[in-house]
Image (cartoon, rainbow, N blue to C red; front, side, top):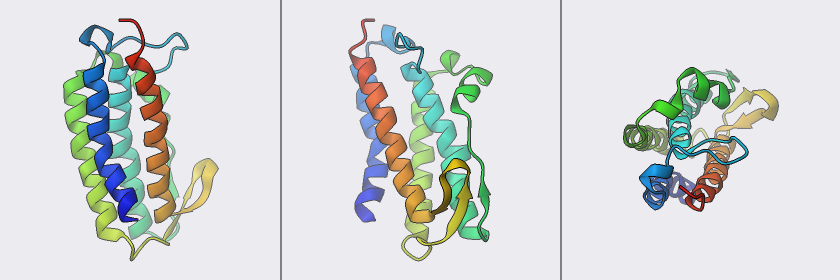
Length: 153
């Protein structure tokens, strides 16, 4: 579990390196398929960290088999106008939110690793599985952001 927690803690630095690899003029450019721009990815990661992952961790630890809400990231992107938000602020806030999430995981692992919640289409999940899901979510966004590095600006 420690390796996974270290990986989660390192992810914002990997994101920061990807941000630096994309020219300023390309940071709001969306791929041809209409998926997120770099700034939209950062806003999504920030909000999901605060309103999704941290909340789910707390609820799994504090409640008996809580129902965990899914978050529609695409809807939030439109509602909150991610495309118009400041990338540097989103990155800073994502770093802070991820550090808080990792602190929660460190506090509650391994003692509460087997506590469970019901998470939408995923069914019953443990706290340990939630941490693995965060890492998988990171990997998906990292791949999408890496593809943005090669888009013409």
